[in-house]
Length: 102
Image: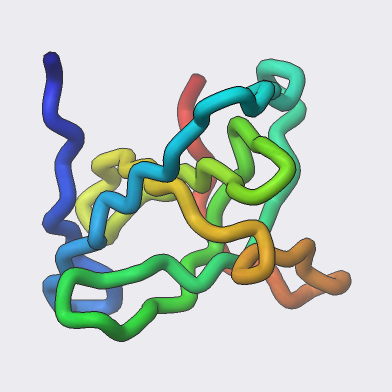
């Protein structure tokens, strides 16, 4: 199938996200209403084992994981499944992401 882009640039630094793909056996995957995806702050796993704080949107979720979408410095769009414990809603004025075109 199609391989998602994993190498992106944020604030002048190049990163590669770990493309974590959880096992969905028996889990229901739900999608947020198109155009109403909530803003989130997520700790996206990187290939070197660390994480990077990303300000993006939650597009899908299961009971354990959230699919987070964001844009990099060049405006390219990326997605990555993140453990739900590593995703949170921002408080007022905290979110500094970019608009995602639909």
